[in-house]
Image 1 (spheres, rainbow over the protein chains, first blue to last red):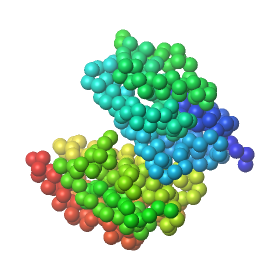
Image 2: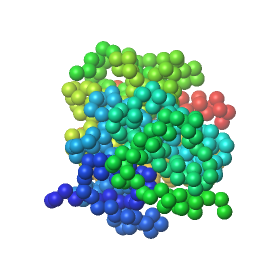
Image 3: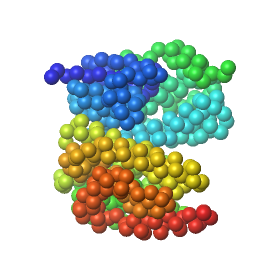
Image 4: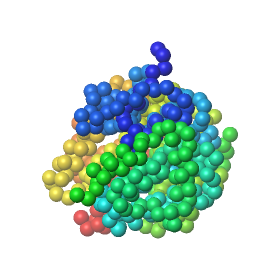
Amino acid sequence: MANEVKLYGATRSPFVCRAVIALNLKGIKYELVVEDLSNKSADLIKYNPVYKKVPVLVHNGNPISESLVILEYIDEVWNGVPILPQDAYEKAQARFWAKFMDDKCFPAVFKAVISHGEEQAVAEAQEALQFLENELKVKGSKFFGGDNINLVDITATFVAFWIGAVEEALGIELLPKDKFPKLTEWSDNYVNCQAVKDSLPPRENLVAIYKKRFGKA
Amino acid sequence: MAGSDDVILLDFWVSAFGLRVRIALAEKGIHYEYREENLQNKSPLLLEMNPVHKKIPVLIHQGKPVCESNIIVQYIDEAWHDKSPSLLPSDPYLRAQARFWADFVDKKVYEAAKKIWMTEGEEDRQVAKKELIEVLKVLEGQLGEKPYMVGESFGLADIAMIPFSVWFHTLNEIGKMNIERECPKLAAWVNRCMERESVSKTLPHPHKFYEFVLEMQKKKGH
């Protein structure tokens, strides 16, 4: 069978966008199957019966769910630009920060958003993001991956692009430049990487969606 | 090749997450120094080695810390790749399945199980029981007729789940349920895993865990 790659989801989801970035980074041809999450397709439910969520990568008929699992799969199957480090210890560090991003940062940021920037929620989100700021400081490199982006940078796409859109849509401040100089610089560098640029949805679309979904009435 | 002479594990005797790491180390026959942490009075070493979460388990290998149990298990497999058995399959698709199900245990089993003894009130407890059985049945669905969770070999997904078998007796007592009867395939899988020395010699007796939970509840004034 020819190499058939399908990705279920839409890039307005930061999780789907991760997978798109990885596919573009490796130069993999794929078909994007856009899902209407309010009316999930029979295929999506078949391929991800456990969570019924996007993204789902289907490679030659084999489904893989959960964005971080997808990123590791893509890295293991396709050569080219590496997504994870080779060294076992560095790999463990990368996985740690990716997991921290999803377990702590994303939920805290989400909470700050749905509360319309309530003080305590914003403080907790910034507390989580501070760990990322410190990590960049300690590493002293352009990206979490060093000179080039890696798993951690890709996982942090929502920080680089989605936070800005949400800030604009809701008129709140989550990532002020003076508090987060490293993350701000990293965000600017990250969104200018070719594979990332090719994958991000139009910012105006995100802003419009969030104004509608989370904006004050 | 990694040396076995500089491996320290910061852990807590009854932690399901720490048990995952101990099982993985036992599978590979790795010698290590076990250090019991008092979670009410964490050691300076723990706080230094896991400043982000301040949690156990932490594997310290040649002075460098690795945190998060599923990540530690994969690290052990990769750092000691020359020691058999492999803890993950070699096929990338099966490896993805292993990671998915190890993560499922974290996201679903742990939360659902904890609720059984943490909820108060009969109604909430019934809801918690239903949720847990649903989650365990999803695992049974994945198991199917296979000996282990992913493929034919014991690995990451099994290691992620098997420590929670220690909880079954406690869940059955407090929840007034019978997990083994409702999930016979899972019960058979537990027995199969227990045939491995790495599991049977590592897991604490389920009654000890029950005593521990009762102690905790007493302290909280239940």
